[in-house]
Amino acid sequence: MNESMRVIYQTVLNRDPNQPEFHQAVEEVLESLGPVIESRPEYMPVVKSIVEPERIIQFRVPWYDDEGTLNVNRGFRIQMNGAIGPFKGGLRFHPSVNQSILKFLAFEQVFKNSLTGLPMGGGKGGSDFDPKGKSDAEVRRFCQSFMMELWRHIGADLDVPAGDIGVGGREIGYMFGMYRKLANEFTGVLTGKGMSYGGSLIRPEATGYGTVYFAREMLATKGKSLEGAKVAISGSGNVAQFALEKVLDLGGKPVTLSDSSGFIYDSSGIDREKLAFVMDLKNERRGRIKEYADTYGCEYTASSPEPNLNGLWGVDVDIALPCATQNEMNGEEAKMLVENGCIAVAEGANMPCTPEAIECFHENGLLFAPGKASNAGGVATSGLEMSQNSLRLNWSREEVDQRLEEIMVNIHKNTADTAKEFGMEGNYVAGANIAGFLKVAEAMEAQGLL
Ligand code: NDP
Ligand code: 2IT
Image (cartoon, rainbow, N blue to C red; front, top):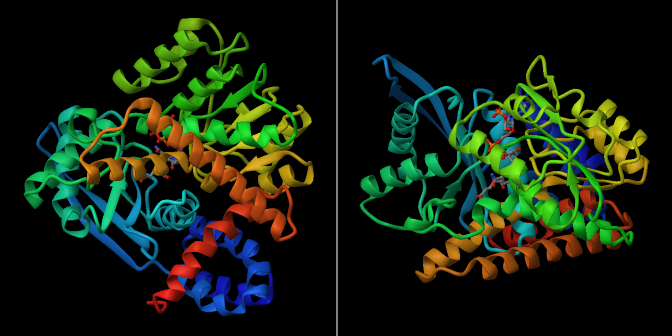
C-alpha cells in the first residue's frame, strides 16, 4: 500500500479497532487505489470520505416467539454511499451480524453497484436474528418488527434493501407487507419480491447465473470453457443453487455443496434431479445438506467448528465457486486447489477468499474473480427490478436474462481493461476496485464531496 493510502488506512483502524472484516475489505481496496492516486492526486479527499459511511442506523427489534417470550435482536442499516444513486444492498439475518460485517458488505456494495453501470449507491443491513429453527410465524413477527423501525429510513428513491444470507422470498414478502401498511403506499422499496407483487423474473437466479457468466468470460480469455470441467461449489443457498444450475447449462460437472454443518462430495456429479432435491431440502423443508449424502449415498464430511469448511477445497476440481460466506477459504485451502490443478476461482459470496488465498491464486497464475465483480449479477437484476417497478411493466424471462448476461460481459470487460490500463493485466481485483471507484469518485467530486 502506498504512503498516502496507509495514512487513511491507519485512521480507519484507529477509529474502529474492533472491525476486522471492515478493515480487510478497506485494505484490499486501498492497496488497489495507489496507482490511481498517483495519476489523479485530486481524488485523495474522495478516498478519505469513501471509507466513512454516510449514515448508520441501529435499532432494537423486539419480537415474541411461539412460547410468548419476548426476544430482543439488534437491527442495522448502513447507508454507505449514495453518490451515484439510491442506497442499494441486501439485508442479512445471521447470528454473526454486527457492524463490522455490515460495514464490509456495504463498502463492497459501493464498488459492485458502480460496476453494474446502473444508478445505485451502496448500502447493507440486517440483524443478528437467526432464522434457523424458527417457525414461519416467528419469522413473520420478527420481519414485521424489523420493518416497523426500518420503514422510516428507506424508500424507492432513497434506499432499496433486498435479500442476503437468511433473507429470501419469504422474508422479503413479510417485510414488504409491513412497509406497505406503514407507508401507505405501493412502491418498489424492496427487491427480490414475489412475482405476484412486483418481483422480477430471473432475480432469484441472478447472482448464481451471473457468477458463472463471469467465470465463462474469464475462461474464454485463455481459450477454455466450463464444458466438461469439474466444479466445487460451497454453500447450498440461493447463490450456490443457481450457480450450480448454470454450471450444468454450460456443460460442467458440479461435485460439492455445503452448509454450516458440513459438505457433500458427489463424485458422480450433481445433476438436475439432485439439484431439485437440494432446492426442496433447502428452500421448502429447510433441512441440512447431510440428507443429500444419506439419500444419494455419497461422501459427507461434518465441519467443526463453524464456519470451518475445511476439506471442501481439498477436492480435485478444475474450477471453484465459493458461494457461502466471508473468509470461507484460507491460504492453505487455496494451496490445495492449486496443487490439484484448479485453473479458475470466481467468488459467488462476498469476500469468501482471505487475502492469503487471493495472493496464492495470483502467484500461481489462476484466474481469480473477486465477488464485487463476479457476484454483481444479483444486485444488477435488482436494479432491473427497480426499473420495471418504475415503468410499471414486467419484462420476460429471456429479456431479463439477456440483460443480466450483457451486464456480466460488460463488467468482465471493464475490469479486465482497467487492470490492463493500470499495468496489472489479469488482476481482476485491481480492475474491479479501480473501475468501481472511478465512477463513484467522479460523482462525489462533482457533488462537492458532501
Ligand atoms: P443463503 O442464506 O441462501 O445461503 C447461505 C449458504 O451459506 C447456506 O448454505 C449456509 O448454510 C451457508 N453459510 C452461511 N453462513 C455460513 C457460515 N458462517 N459458515 C458456513 N456456511 C455458511 O444466502 P445466499 O446464497 O443469498 O448468500 C451466500 C453468499 O452470497 C453471501 O456471502 C452473500 O453475501 C452473497 N451474495 C448474495 C447475493 C444474493 O442475491 N442473495 C448477491 C451477492 C452476493 P446454513 O444454512 O447452514 O447457514
Ligand atoms: O451482496 C449483494 O449484492 C446482495 N446481497 C444483493 C443486493 C441487492 O440489492 O440485490
